[in-house]
Image (cartoon, rainbow over all chains, first blue to last red; front, top):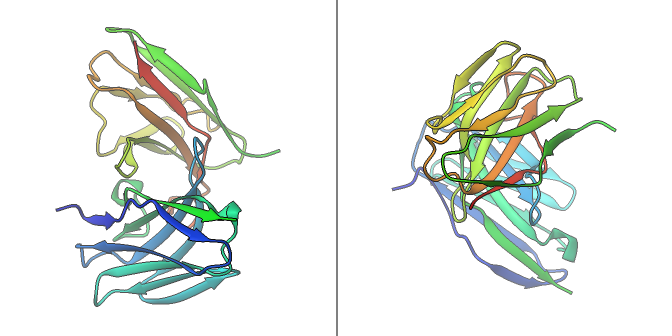
Length: 113
Length: 114
């Protein structure tokens, strides 16, 4: 079993819809949770970073962590065609040491105009 | 215009050949990283460096080598010992030893085997 599971999609929604992207994980020691956006043939871009449980909002994006269920979500409100990309979740147990960041395989999202 | 540059964008390797991927950053970041991305898989860490003249193996270092002689540069060599090198290679940097909070990626190099 992978430490981090992410549905690969593709997920296709109409413009303006609310999008929900999710990851599950098995390691209860994970405390730091990240979401990256990756456009086709480009490097990932860090969207949001959260520590422990709770919600974090940044414009149209909301990151949610439920440690009791080992489940994290990224919500995108008022989705735009420019949001079409692959979204990667990532997590780690410690704040330092790059070797312990575990990435999900990514969900491909398409927003239809 | 600050950022991370990687070259070349595409690279072709023949059997038994070593190839070197370039990564340069002008963000004045101390830490730099190399990741490999395969279809349907998450990013996997190859090597990372937290300071000049020092680097550590990541999760999949076999068949790869790096150097960190300058703060701005962190080249990756894919050696002939790497039997399955076809992948998308990503270089990243962070301003401290806390990549969870801030990590910037370059545009990537796609390596193909002839």
